[in-house]
Amino acid sequence: MRVRWNPDPPYSMRDGSDRVVGLQAELVEEALERIGCRAVWVQLPWARALVELQAGRLDVLPGALRRPEREAYAHWAEQHVVVPNRLYVRASQRAGFGNATRLRDVLKPGLKLGVQIGVVYGPEYAALLAEPDFRARLTQAAARGSLWQMLELGRVDGVLASEASARWELARLGLVAQIVPTDVLLSDEAAQIMFSKRSVDAALVQRYRQAGAAMEKDGTLARVVRKYLVD
Image 1 (spheres, rainbow, N blue to C red):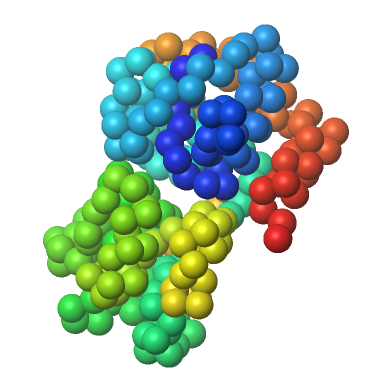
Image 2: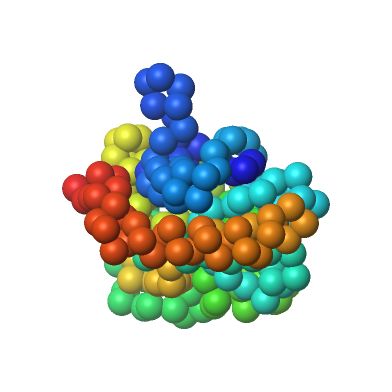
């Protein structure tokens, strides 16, 4: 099975032996092995991975939020891991965001946001994308690392990211004190796994779902989550 990955710690990354590892990587590999399949890792940025999945040249795309426009070309399986998406800002500007919890409530004139190309961070974000004024605020990048740098330098005023990714990356960049989370919550729904309808049979996806449920029941899921998400 051709499975998408991209450097996105702690979900997927390469270890010292050049193997693809990480929270999503381990869970997907284990579930596929339980149904007699093997993961063939294909490195792709998110937007390109969606195109390849639609065309059937990619079989599996982990870490997606379920959206109506994706139903036509994807089967879905639960990932059973909930990690909120939040708005991150410079610590020096944090007080100006108060305790607002909705993105719309902090969209002051001139506010610029850094986002990854093709990523949908949650239902409010998806709705805001329909508004030209909101889209004009966005600075898009294929990799989140450049967005943290832009935020540190003041080229954007906020970055949208999952809590797990932000915690991991900011610690390694030495930016934990400079860049902090706000109370703005984009999504706290569990990401799911997309399977291409062009290349993957629905019956196989059902077997994958059963394997995932078994991993939750037997403690495999909890073990992997502890490995990557617990400080």
